[in-house]
Image 1 (cartoon, helix red, strand yellow):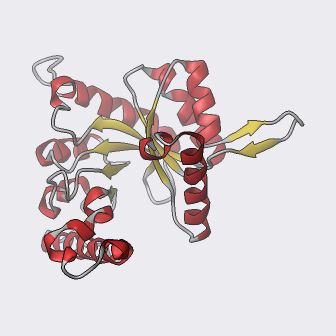
Image 2 (cartoon, one colour):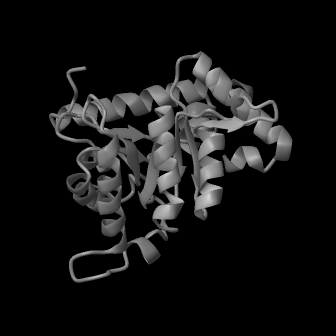
Length: 247
């Protein structure tokens, strides 16, 4: 969302057009916004991004109408529960920051609270508890967790803590995460994780193995090739670990 918002109102307009286009193609839209605040403000975020807003003519309308968004849990329950209520009301979902992929995440998230628990453990248990109210027919909650591909050991631990929560897995590709690193984010049935790769897809045309094949203006074709390569690598790794779903 930051790369839209930095252009002001025109950027937000472009974001709305992006969401509309994606939904028109039958895609699920996950907005990486990492929002949170005090309760009253969080309710406004939840209504605007996931739900509907009241207009001056006393009708309700969608603003952004995304399917999922990332949210920050560190303001406590009053900064999170309005998002959960919006998920219930509008059949939407959220991904709560638990163990993020950035290099400095451990400065706070890995701080020990006791001999056996660190901060991300406590957040994970809370996500599991809150998500229990929104379990779908396939056994997964609409309340998911952000778990970085760059921390496979933590992912293995967190998958045990949150068996019913979908993982949104950033950090694959440009941040250093590889297919073998994200295997623990999946459950044994091969489900439970959505792997995110941004820069390595968007800027694939700048890479050595693509820049000789594509001109800069052909970046969509390079992005497509990079996305297919990513899909194939993850599929191969799931098969190697006997986690490839039967679909």
